[in-house]
Image 1 (cartoon, helix red, strand yellow):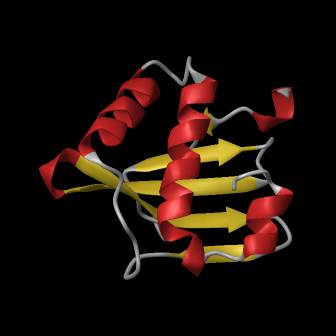
Image 2 (cartoon, helix red, strand yellow):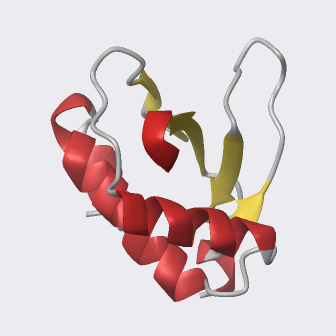
Length: 110
């Protein structure tokens, strides 16, 4: 399971977001943004072999509780990988119509 751990990363200025996560040893990158009233949303996700999916105009934010938990986990340098995976999967499920299903299946995100 070590290659499935999330990690905090950075991206070039051409890919702006508030939070950057890598997953599965860098095979997947997820960008999240803050939304008004303290919620966050999945802005972009990219996969090795499937490309990048920019959700800038088609996103659905997480609820306030999951958004707070996400931010708290990030502040701890992702100590709770399982809880973060649950939140990331929820963010993806809210937006899965805009992401290739085969990519989500291959990387165990649905």
